[in-house]
Amino acid sequence: MRPMTKRTIRLPEALKLLADGQLDNTYSVEFSTSDRIEATDAIKLGAIGIDVPEACIYYDDANIAEDEDFDGEWVPIESDIDHYKNHLHIQLNVDKEIEQWLASTDVDLDTLVSELLTGFYRSSKAVSK
Image: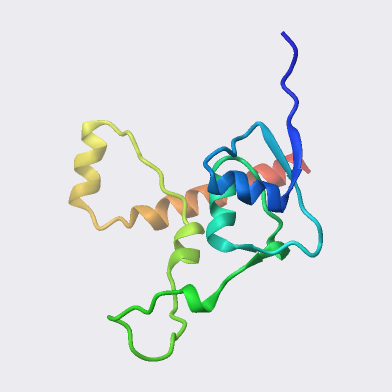
């Protein structure tokens, strides 16, 4: 069985095929530096595996619907997503006796495990020197 080769087309032809529902992953789209594509069409192309260069994507502000629930300027907010990404979540499987001991003490497991791992890491680095 021969590997399938993709047919290379230019953006205008791709957009016509997309509108007709005939564009699929058997096509490869060649973009030029002057090509412009609406963001919604770029998303549709991406969904079928065609990567659109970011420089070609434009956003038509006239086609963006207003949010009736929002009135005013967008204000950036502090997000805890970076904080969340920097934390490792682990699950400990311990004996019942240890579980009962942890429940009866004021041990901060996050701090304990962080300190144990940090100490282990530093010890490993010192031993390897």
